[in-house]
Image: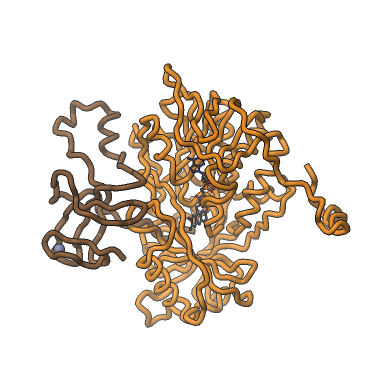
Length: 101
Length: 416
Ligand SMILES: Cc1cc2nc3c(=O)[nH]c(=O)nc-3n(C[C@H](O)[C@H](O)[C@H](O)COP(=O)(O)OP(=O)(O)OC[C@H]3O[C@@H](n4cnc5c(N)ncnc54)[C@H](O)[C@@H]3O)c2cc1C
Ligand SMILES: [Zn+2]
């Protein structure tokens, strides 16, 4: 179980949160000028590092705030987000992939 | 190749089993092959086997980071089934189950394929509608799915005593998929390796690929390993879960994310469940192994992960879902748990495809890919040999994403 620090509520149990997937670059302002390839890249390609990953989290069963943190995809250590704070907007709000033998 | 039979077993018993041939050779690593396959899991080995058998391409090296068959194929819960929905996926998975039916004989290897049926325990009406829809689609492609009553469900799975009318999610019916079954995971890897070796394919263990190498014209040149560079005009990345780690070394971006999927087993008990039981609304599935252990699986971790292990919260949810339907399992001791890294494509369907790098082939996005091993290998071998997609995988090409032409199975398989 991870301990996640919500910027509003402080350190709380992971079960109060929903992970919204990796932080993405800002939505291109000039979407209509982009090539199909660049637009599709923005839409569907996400970082998948074996290491630190900036990630969106939603304090769904708490204050409701979205924020970004960094989590290590191998050790699962969590630390504050070091980049620009772009919180406030949800990405996909995805859940897990349910059971499938 | 030394054939396995009752006779060879008896003959080797006379010499205390000291004279069995090694199942595959360990030749020295050369620096040039016609084809390099990265990853000696089920898909990599099946590809090597069918390249040799169907296309006569035998100057092939399979390079494996660890030991042969030590990746996800060793970690999976061995369910083989074809209850898919889409016209794009159904023929592929139906073919894969058919290939499993003949694989043991084909390989002269006991793969312990047991077509024991899978029974879905359905607890919600949306799930029931989804499965009935699959039943009709599967009928078109020659696979079988049949509804059964709650009484019949409880007759076939006597230990299913939960989910009664007063429970939170009462059982409303079941579906039987008689083509489904289980096979021995190690035997698939070892049998395919032995078969490929017999055609002259080389397997090199403890040979991690660190980088892909490109020529100045952009095409693939080979791979870099700690044992030296190895060159080939055609390279296939078949590394399940670690695809992006490799493709990033040449700047190729793919719509894949890696998740950990886990499983656990109970202590061995007397045989009492003779089908694969899948409980999609409660989020778990199980079968009983020949050793008597219950093999149990649930959902993936809720966030990306390369850590192979079990996440406490996922484990707790899986167990609590299971105990609601099988309260007597409270008395079972659990023996072992583990996880594996699987990559999911953006639409959660597999990718078997060429890409922008000439000579580089990809087989990835296999998050339920044990069932797909024979057809995955057959079709990837066809693609490598002819540079044209096999009809069964035309829809699984990478460029479907450029057309936003997704093959959406998972929205249906995985919504609880
Ligand atoms: C817990 C669990 C349960 C599952 N249950 C089922 C199920 O019931 N039914 C089903 O159909 N599927 C199931 N799966 C999925 C299935 O196991 C995988 O989809 C399938 O095994 C992937 O294909 P593979 O066998 O080729 O992968 P792997 O066996 O993982 O083969 C890939 C190989 O590539 C090697 N490799 C990685 N990086 C490198 C490198 N840089 N250089 C060289 N080699 C490298 C790895 O070491 C590995 O041996 C399950 C998976 C897990 C984890
Ligand atoms: Zn909060």
